[in-house]
Image (cartoon, rainbow, N blue to C red):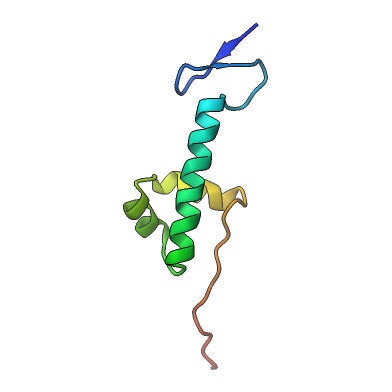
Length: 79
């Protein structure tokens, strides 16, 4: 039995989380985010979204699931 993707309507095997089409699309978006952050390491989610056209919620989802990490490059002040 073949299921259809709820997002794009492509065929997918039962039990799959994403179809091949959506999986490739997600990978392309992840790469775009990663490349932008490498070029502009102190960017926030809104800046990344504006530059890449990828939603803030999707960017935050990548951070939450551990695909992207936040690095604090700000110098610490001595108190």
